[in-house]
Length: 144
Ligand SMILES: [Zn+2]
Image (cartoon, rainbow, N blue to C red):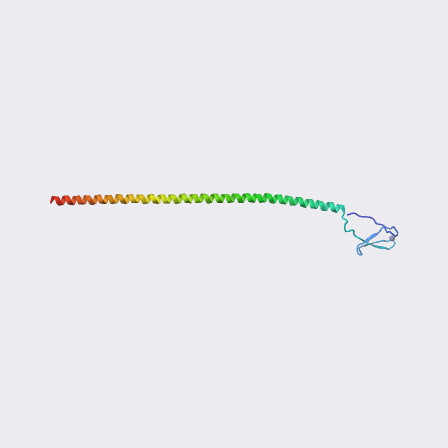
């Protein structure tokens, strides 16, 4: 803030600022002067400070933005990794499911085929035994 010394236009004494009345008074001739503010006047120091603040804000903003960019990319990469892992695991799980299903089906078929072979063998044996009994009966009836 700049302080300007002002003298009374009437008696050239130093003017005093009256805080209560918000005007300037001459202690010598007791004249009072109203203060007219220049609305467009901005203290260059204040202007510089404002510029500094503005620059700092812009800097902070760009830093925040670049940080957000990095953060966004990191989150995106993590999400992509999780997605890929999920897809990979799903495909792997499906493959394993298919393989297991095939194995079960194959072993079921094998078991059925073995069962069938076993049944056929049993029937054959039964037929052989029946034939042997018939042969024996026939021979015995021929003897007597
Ligand atoms: Zn005066």
